[in-house]
Image 1 (cartoon, one colour):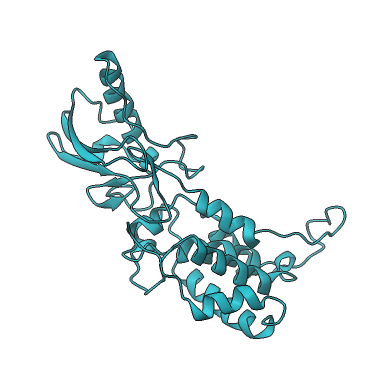
Image 2 (cartoon, helix red, strand yellow):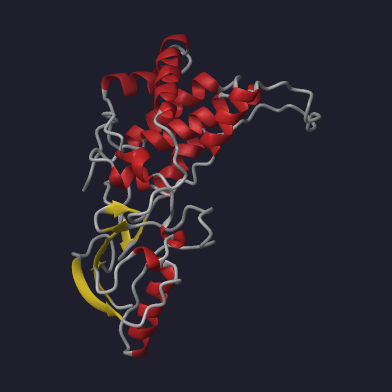
Length: 268
């Protein structure tokens, strides 16, 4: 199959970018989207041109490294699929595809289709962990966890932090990512001691990283490759509201920062 690609090319964050047209010829329909780009890059390198830069690692839909916009949709047209697991058979021969990087102030372009998502790392570092020392690992059956809570926690833990939710949201909100990480730990017994602090600190850090606010549009859920549900955002909001009252004195600076100045980021 043959395709026409319109790819966003940008040397670095401070350089202007532009769409460049490329022809992808004799593509095997069983190739993944990234394998198709590998073929295009081999041709560019053979002609002495700069290859298209894009993020990737495991190429198994697990690591969350890959991701960009395909015809205006994060990760492309197939629901519940990362770019690396999207195969060319889902496109038509002769189709024109427009490839762009994630568009959010919190995700500056590094080069071409690759963006800096270290803002997610800083959000996790602000509270997305369990630091309470519990000694040696207890027996698996020593801490009873209700089946419903365990299943919801595992569903939330499926988030791979790819950033598609931010890229697709008109407000560039990280609420689905935040909700998944806060819910994952907040639903388990081990996460209870730091539950309040976690909610306030992570939401406050998201504001510092210039992510936008959530207005319940639902685009994040529609493009999430792990199909994280919007209910995690409701759970995050509940935890934050409760914590903002019960932990106001202990976390006054972070809590008041979010209350006085709601998340005000957005697209570039």
